[in-house]
Image 1 (cartoon, rainbow, N blue to C red):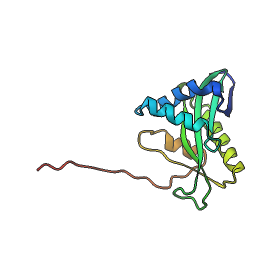
Image 2: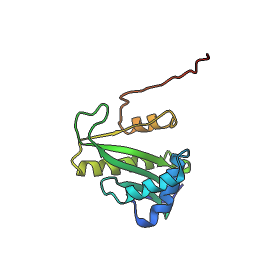
Image 3: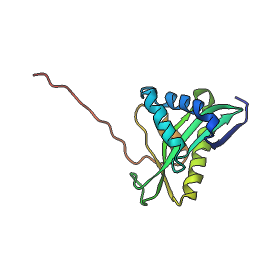
Image 4: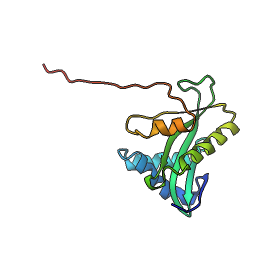
Length: 150
């Protein structure tokens, strides 16, 4: 991809494309619930959404917030990456890092001195993407279950 990609806060004209990116990130989520959640986020300045815009096409997004605690953090005001997605055709170009940098800048402006995030095994690319940006793994859990026959 050769287009210039800009990172900016979500604008009203971005909503439909942003919701499509949310659906790509969380394909098993109820689309109606994703839409309702999006409306709440869009109205809350303390839960900013940053988007990557390639000439009018959104190719990535990051949703952030502030948490009062997070594993591995020492303070009670922590910038948090709630959702982070770059469309497959746009990966490996630094767009994800630029989205994270925008969220980190916002968090610093809110008085945060730490940033945190989480992921699950559903997102196998996430740990290495976080590590490339200086995030360290704090805790890794795998849960097991077995049905017992009578």
